[in-house]
Structure formats: C-alpha cells, structure tokens
Length: 123
Picture 1: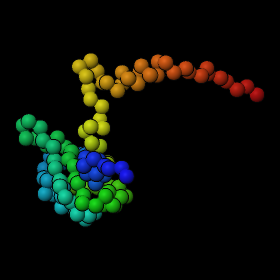
Picture 2 (picture 1 turned 90 degrees about the horizontal axis):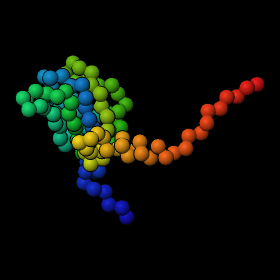
Picture 3 (picture 1 turned 180 degrees about the vertical axis):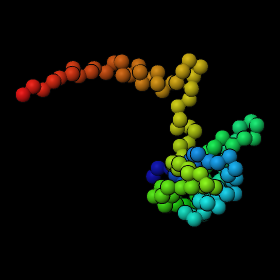
C-alpha cells in the first residue's frame, strides 16, 4: 500500500485563486468558496508592505469540492478570478544563482536527442 505525504493529500484539496481584488479578505474568500464545500482554510498572500499580492489559496475538507469549483467561472468581490489546482512547493523546480535548474537539465537532455530531418511530401 502506498502512503501519501501530508502535503500531497492537502494539495489534492487545495486550490490557487489568482486575480483577487486588493480589497478581498480571507473571510470573504472563504465565504465565497463555502458554497462548493466546507473550507478548511483560506489564505491571501501579502507582500512585505502588507499589500495584497492578488492571489491566495483555499483548502477544502473534501477533494470532491474541487470538481465543483472547476466547473464554473468565479467572481469574488466583483472581480473575475482564476482557479487552479494548487501545486506543492516541493514539486516546483528550485532556482539556482545561474538560472533555472530544470531548464538547464532539459536543455542538456534535449541537446543529445536526435532530431528527425524535415521531410516534404510531394504528389
């Protein structure tokens, strides 16, 4: 039996909400998404000056709530928002001081892949 990590279980119930109004609060975000299922947590990201970064996250108690969310377009506090399945931080490639690690790795791999010659079909 495979055991899932806590972060992968939570991410299967968590959505990213982008395009939030600067006036949206965590309470209004939670209240909006409660119509799709019980919201365990709602968070809005802020910069160092306590200004909204325009995105946040909602974690539902049931993963089935995400299916309901993704069926519709959403308008939170008078602003259309974009909802996506949240991706755990550990699943995102880390940046190195000399550029993106994954891009370098992909470039190195692709440089060794033979490319089929371009062919044209004449009739």
